[in-house]
Amino acid sequence: MQTSRGQSCIDCPRSPSERIITHISLMRLQRTVNALQKRILELKKEKHAIILGHNYQRKEVQEISDFLGDSYGLSVQASKTDAKVIVFCGVDFMAESAKILNPDKTVLHPNPKAKCPMAGMVDAKSLRELKAEHPGAPVVSYVNTSAEVKAETDICCTSANAVKIIQSLPDKKIIFVPDTNLGLYVQRFVKDKELVLWPGYCPTHMNIVKEELVKLKKLHPSAEILVHPECSPDVIDYADHAFSTEGIIRHVVSSPKTEFIIGTEENMIHRLRKEAPGKTYYAVPGATCPNMREITLEDVRDSLEKLQYRIELPKDIIKKAKIPLERMIAAGR
Ligand code: SF4
Image 1 (cartoon, helix red, strand yellow):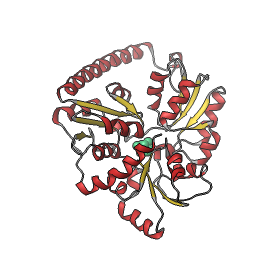
Image 2 (cartoon, rainbow, N blue to C red):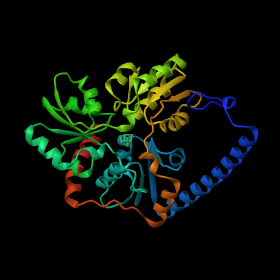
Image 3 (cartoon, rainbow, N blue to C red):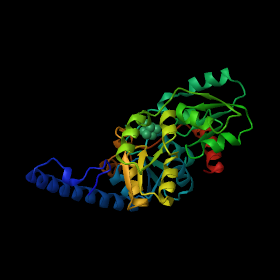
Image 4 (cartoon, rainbow, N blue to C red):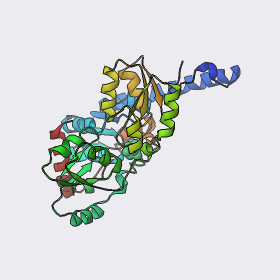
């Protein structure tokens, strides 16, 4: 068996007795996981709920999700579900988006500690000040923003459609918040426009550094390097391609290549193994989002049992924030 980091079991430094103990512990752990997953599926039926899970969720949470996807795909699923209850396994802004699109439904976020630090880097007051400095410039907000920031926004985007959305606007000057790296990436394709950027960033994608990619490429020279546009410009320049998470999946599924270095949150590799089994994936050291990992199976079970933690937002914010989100969905990928 080979791990995502290219080690084999033969390289395992444990003694035979340690390996047996580890094996027994893993079997017990798997039994607990299976029991929790079974209970969650029962509760889901009982409460008429669906579970939406982001591509960066833990493997066992991905396994009980009705839909897996990126922010765009999950927003679309949230906008068309008939379920009474939506359990959102992702970070805070994603669950808020589901509530904005479904104000009359119960939207649950299983662990309020799962917050996106990048979304916390811009607030509505600071954005209003920036708007006053650039009168008339429309605001495009990455979907990784709070409901209050969305309420100050003209149109939202995800990494999957940021270029398309900015290209579709007639304006020359556009305010883009909060991810500088995504803004710089988009700017490569819209040379006729001036993007006013915000100094926000994703700490996880900033942990993906070129030196690590160079090392991995030396170890696996046939592997193609795929990174996310939230990575820094030098990482994007060194990679073979930059795609959103769904873009990475589409590319891997259709590519004749069999080895890939994955420059985004490493839990993506579980989804890739499912969608394109038989291929080999190498994670980049440090590409872990601790916020996405906050949600456990126990949290999801408790969330369904107690209908916690409900997302509640002021009506006026929902009304205003819905407009840029619906525009984004209408624009497509
Ligand atoms: S990976 Fe980055 S952008 Fe995504 S939730 Fe984690 S910190 Fe936020």
